[in-house]
Length: 524
Image 1: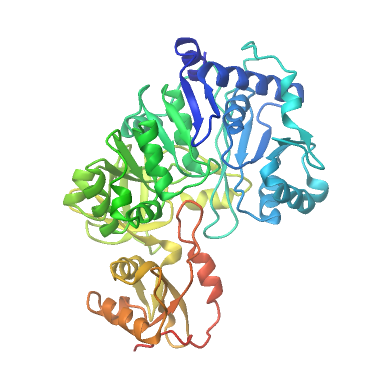
Image 2: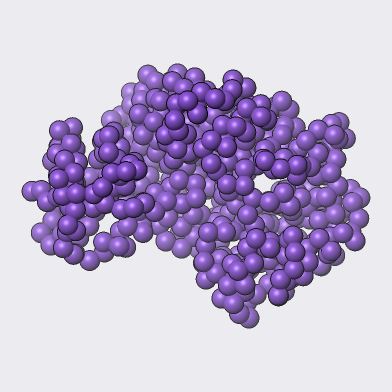
């Protein structure tokens, strides 16, 4: 018996998932039966255990029956971002060797572009949710004729097959072995601790504010396996999120810092309009949170703003609650499983002392491999078997982890290592700055120099004078070598749908030396 099926027997009428702002919902019995129908349908396609289903879907109620149906059929599912181009989506479909492609009417254009880019590599089975489109069969008609019986073959338990966001290049597939049927209710130790960290139980009401195709969509699975309710926003909106918390008596949420910033930017009268007292845990991750933003959120929502640091690879996870963070501002906590180690970034197998910045490694994580890339997989682990996300940081004397930057974001100017996040943190405290990125750009003498790209708050205009002011603002708080020599302005910085700053995009933009813009300040 699976977790979902057990809940379907004990609380059949309880809402498992609800689309926010609509009457679209599934109770536990309905979700369980729909998952069975999906599983029977997929098995009727004669798919071998471990075959791959690619999902090109927006936040759609059908996603949930597909997730559980695919798992019951012993298959992998690959969620694909609907923000990709057809060529980008086709790369993932082709790389994962998907046998089935399922899209939705809302993504007809993207689905058509993806098929065009795939050419002869298009999956043999293609289905369209919510309507009909050329090259796809109607999903609902295909599934409707299938049985809702729980009498299914005892195949291995299917699971997600996630692709990284591609912030540093082509997305990488993260594929783990399927769990044998006899062990279908087992959870890895790290997963058990994640659920305990999030304080999940049958009373949890989770507001899902991110795209379901993102790795954080797995929190919905955790909530439902614990017997709670998921409320799904189609797209994040600051005030709509507050209204949803009040209306659905939300207890749990998973947020990213940009969402915090947008909610804090609302008029105080608007923020005060909503009753948010039902909340028990507000978890945040995926991107660094500026200290002043987190302080403001704790002041508003109380000591429920907890943070974790990890990644889709799950080589390790740290956690820190609001009280611990207030006494160690900027920390991302201690590991919830295993240990964290700071290693020298010089090719030597040397562990660093507290306070020294190096590569962050973990032991005690969950094993994985990158699909079709053995060399990349090996690069994640050192000779001791410890894994890394490629981030830099240090430990304090009590073992709390502090982040610096990604290794790929490190700036080396004249042989000196510069961690961009330090300057970014300073810039984000300036009253004119809404968002900031600091990158290394080519410099003939030093190899690289520090540049800031800044998004101003609404209503403000770029100027040479303001650029100079921002440079001086940094120099008042940091050594000159860490400060930007130039500041450019952008209407908006490139970020992923889950708030990650896409510095790769900026670095490509500044790949060759070019004259400063009119709104840039030059320093020495």
